[in-house]
Length: 435
Ligand code: SDX
Image (tube, rainbow, N blue to C red; front, side, top):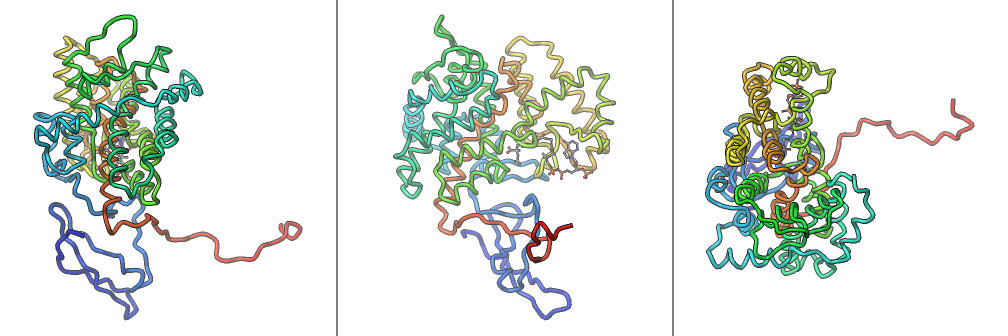
């Protein structure tokens, strides 16, 4: 570990003379950690932390979050500054390599991504096996995982060069596959990537162009898409990233690991929330219905949540939500949309919720998903594609975290334990002797 020793913690078991001293490690920022790796050997006990809310699963240098202060740093740079001054391909370089690139490094990195955007022609035939109305996230899980069936030269995770190429292939091909999933759902022909467009513009081009006429990508929409990709690129050890790390710890190939991440992201409690927010706003329909909806959320039996609100780490505003709301106004303004009822409704819902004690007492504030869907809808993207766009952005985060894990000399297969509360040992009872 590259942490700093910071004293120790003594664990002792009441009523016994058993105790152990466990080292405390300090990182660059954030809480110290108690290293419990010898706890079971010394005291014969495990720690218990369902959902890993209080557990550091790894040492990482990529992203830092301060949930109380609403801080998000990519390699130490505040998300607000990156959203304002950087762009997605430069953020990809930063997340993958740890430093902002020189002009030459960025040019070389861009070339590396650009010349991997096409997919093997056989992959087009995969789509024929899906129903046209398949959810595009189902397609993403299947097709991204299937990349392992094409890139055999990329499956040795211990070869740095193969890891580098696999990273480029994933960052470059996931948007192409995402656009193919969208086109397939429309019954329109796939659109090949273009090497003369930057990442976000190329993605919008593949989503919207048709062979029948030229398609000019709007710079406004390209900038908005780029900003959305930057905001979603990485986020510490969230559920999908932890899934990628756990899959990667077994030595599974990178394509399988990223497909696992996509599957985890799909859940409405995670990346599927942006789609769920639009559905929720549609169900609320009008500001006059907000009070009754809020009452439903407060009723635990309703199982209704305020989607786009709350976060395991942020107990303050998600800094990305603030930037997203600002971007929302910019995009709608630049698109000449002066009256977007969904945005008005979302803002009224936020205004009410952040002053309601139910949410304040539980520290529930808007997260990244609360406004993103409104921007994407204004850009003409269907709700079924919202989580796909989240997956396009997060692929660089997953790949960066996967690479960091593989290159960590202390990494070993992930294998959590449990506390067992099932039946004690008992002997088999033949069917004839059962009650
Ligand atoms: C993402 O981890 C990441 O970093 C994820 C992410 C990333 O970039 O990777 O940031 C992306 O997934 C953002 C979150 C998107 N999900 C949603 O918007 C879905 C709605 N949110 C909730 O499902 C929930 O807030 C979670 C899943 C996000 C967090 O779940 P937790 O940590 O279990 O919630 P909690 O412990 O903070 O909840 C405390 C209380 C509980 O009530 P009580 O038992 O105390 O009475 O708040 C309640 C919860 O039931 N609560 C909500 C709520 N979220 C929590 N009540 C109503 N609406 C909500 N949205």
